Image (cartoon, rainbow, N blue to C red; front, side, top):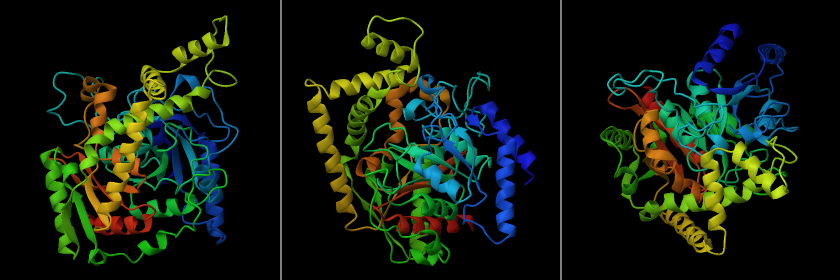
Length: 473
């Protein structure tokens, strides 16, 4: 595609608020020309050389604003790249801009960014908007990585980076009809990812195909001396093993469908899961129903742990030496810090900080300790299930993409219901991928989630590639 046509497409996405910061057209074009020169000389840097990618605005990018969708960091320009961005640009990938997100990653719909909500590129079904105008009602792209998902879905870039703490890559991928991958905790370095909840945060990948997802993962995965939580064992490349995969490779694979994950989904989703299970069995795989009874405790467990870690991580946001600082003169540092946070942070972020501070206090610590014990039970439950199956098959979420008005009616706490199928995987630190394998009765995409045991990304992507090829036929 001609670059100027592509850049006009990128600029058109500003109508739905996909990007917070865009790189200059001239710089992107120069990088594309350099990549073409390498190809012409037979000096390509690898599978991602010359590919355009967008970066969620909580990943640091040297000399490019990194705001986390917050007023507090609207003027912050990092002096360094995150490890993931560094590794991609070293292999010739080209950053096109920073994408919109819920403030500091705290949301499921991309409605609470300081820079305004990000809207889905998809139009709501005509029978759902009622008498309200199209400007007032739209489909949400999912959060908190909604901007990255829409950028990939609209072909403004080849792939994008997001972050997934409780489903923030998989949920937008499902709502936007693309591939969304969350690695095992520790597989990809978090260096340069501005933290939400450090024991849950992972860097995820948005693409339009499983093969490209594997190519990107191969570049950014692996141990990093700057992040002590990264897995130190040698990383086995995923992309090579996908080249020869076919549906027949599903033979003898054992799949489990957790009954708790399908009990509350809508009719379209139940039909889709049955269809995908049929594909698997038709190609020699085995499907059985399994049980993960601790699933019902995952959301409250996550809310307590996440809030506690938010409170700890946000303590550095004082307005000194960086970040929003009130122009009003205050009589003490404590009052200045409080003023800066009141004016610079949104109400959802403030609420979580206050809740997390309580959970870490003497009075509230018992709730935090119970949540940690529950998290351990959830992880152990998954391990027990993986003794009997290779991969779990679930809906990615409860339904198709909702309208912004539906999310607003629910509020920031109740809207966590859309994360019911994604949060338990994050608590257990497992890898998962959302695949666009079907659609609702009114044509909106539905994602199917595959989950494997820790550090089994190779097996997970192989199975995903097989299912992708079956549906594409």
